[in-house]
Length: 483
Image 1 (spheres, rainbow, N blue to C red):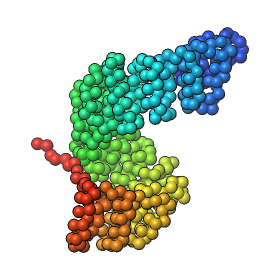
Image 2: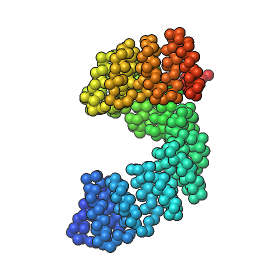
Image 3: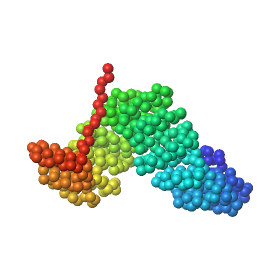
Image 4: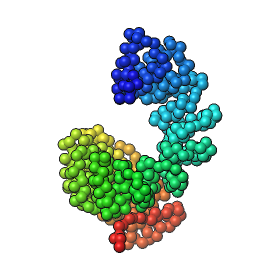
């Protein structure tokens, strides 16, 4: 039975167990029953009754107090998504060991992260000493909860220091991830530097964290140091490097990563090629982006969507729509994001009729209900074409309350075409929903300035000061030649 499990044949392992039991070949012992429960946890959902049948046999054999079997039963229930049933079993175990607690913690991580803080407190209240698995699981769960439970993350870190599990690499990776998910880059670097052992996952995670915290240059520096000490990058490393290059619009560094991707060959999968395509597009190198796209042996919805957006952002709106039409002939179905990109291409190209057609196609052909982003795109399409009244009517027909984005899009169109009255109305709606968003004030102020309405500009500036609305300074990255 164990041999079948090791060779990914869990169903055959269960068949052997069933035959042994029904033919009365031998009475199963605890090791046999643990293997059977393990096999049942690896099978598909259509056999969710099997763990219960095995447990019934365990009870008949008088082994229902065996902690190894109870833990295996607990694990099997969780593997089949039976969280509530697993909790009931867990609560009936009289002498829980650390495996019992860890198994339940892992279940919460998979199905109910928000319960992890309470479960951690419960462990502490019961004087359960956590091990490396406990720490790694708890920190991963707290990372997923992000800012809402950062204080508890600090408490777990303090407990980790006291118990001496800080040298464990999985625990270290989880700790770094917890800090990075909370945007604590300095603390994340400190935890990373204190890790005695790091693998490629550690380095890739640190680089990705830098990128998520708005530090693409630091992300590339981390990857450069990783390669310098001889750690071979994996697909996640390369994808992060390419995303950093795209953010920086650093074409030369992006080409270097492309060369590394070519060198690694078949070890790299589609996520890297998608990132490569995006990098070339963000750097305005469309010939290379087309080359990557056409060379892909397989394309996911991300690949198609990325290419559509690449064309739309680089003045190739008609080509973007041609790619979408080509995509629809394949088995890959467009998603919510795909239609945002398609509608954006229509707005960039001034394709009003096509925009209406694709907008209607979302629900009709694919069952995708248009969201606020899609309505904003349609308002932009109509607004750029000077169809301000039609754009306003579309907003008023929306099946849900229009958000700030939609009203700001209409305001931007009014600024473009000098429609002051509709623009003021759009601004009122936007400000009513978010008084602190500086974009609305600035759009309206710019419209007044273009019409030489300086009194209106002054009033808006004073209103921003009164409401303590701060203009967020813009930032951009440029690549300069290195001597």
